[in-house]
Image (cartoon, rainbow over all chains, first blue to last red; front, side, top):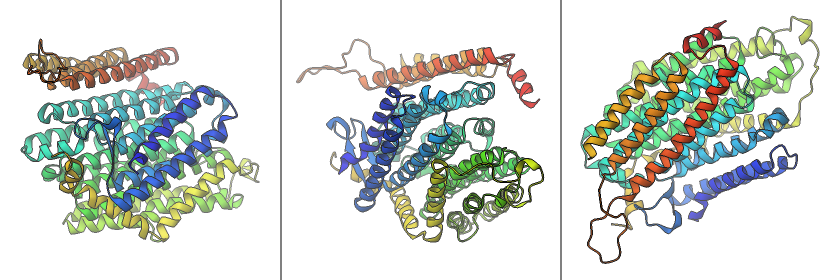
Length: 495
Length: 113
């Protein structure tokens, strides 16, 4: 079954070529939907097999393991990959309505598929240099999607994004180069084996370079300033899968790199990671407090949620990592869905600005309900999905005696609630003041409401019945934290 | 040989960072080009450089072989760096057309208006 590892990647690359050939063609709509459905099915199968059988390994071109490029799929990567594909399907459906002909002629769908190919590649590859290449694929397609349309605002948002991401890639590449120089290996398992024999110095250096590189890409504390400048500018579908894919893949890469390569000297990073996490959450959530533009509020909340993940990464233990994985999945669903709903608020209520769009609940109860589910999932109110992730993280924080940092995590949860309640009260609950907002002018559209509905229901599902995802994330974190077993499984046949 | 390459790469890093910190976007572009070359050179030096040794040897020959992997990887990263640079330059061209200035501070000021 190991050939399954390559199928999501292969499928999205093929679809990207097809999308480019048929750009602006109406016939592509159904083919693309089929492509994303195929992506969901194949990632689902991959998740099923990796959860059943443990590690799946594919040696590309039949080259033996430490020499050739391989794909190695653990439960963690497969889980994230599966949920990213679901998000892809929903974002595609949403784009069908939102993206106008001009953009689709410019190759929007092609770039979207390439972006997912890049994300699949980063998650599923077992080779460090190959991972860099997929990161670049991901990043270049995100540049394209961000600056497509080329109006003044988008160019301004794209400038810092492109330059900082370029810098981040350079950090990652130089770290990979130095690792290669020291160990002579690029395969994760072999580097992991060889790093065991080295002292604390190399781990600290390379880990710090990776943290800087991926930190820029996923917007951690001192490096996040580009995110609120650029994420609210493109169409909502793009913002949604940027929020769900691009930043989250950066976080996942950090988990993989730290879990597999630098686990032995994790104590060097732990304190720094925990406090970077705390600062990230606090600065993100405070940035959002004073804003009234829905998209900007949500952009700042991306940063604050990334903080929780980095906090979990820093706690470094099976329990904390399981909670982080759960949190990442929850965030992929809830956060992206909020961007979709933000776009609907704009379409139905007339503006992204909360001071203009008011009282949507009076005319659009369904979308209000869906917003309620996603927003309160994000804040972590008990029956919803965010609760389980935050509970696990804070619990693990208390167990690790990080009382101060954990209480910050709780406090940030409160401020997140404040922001979401602000959107809820102003945007949905209040009676509309101006004449403009009175009366339902616009109707729901199937292509927009269906993806929002799917994501909300999924988010509700993992909130009410979290056992399945909890056990998956537990399995994933345990697999990541047993590098010895991992090395044996991969290199066992070689030595 | 490796020492020299590493030193050169270090100097290029310094120049690249210096240019990146400049207040004009064109200089930032130059900085990013220099930086990407610095990283490529670093990667190349890390693969250990051999002169006059072939990368591929026949079966049974007891020659020392050079390491082809680092060259292959550097080739890939050169191509990626080149495409990124091309994108950045195209973006700068659009920015030049649409914004009044390419000074970083001016762009930020225009933003806050």
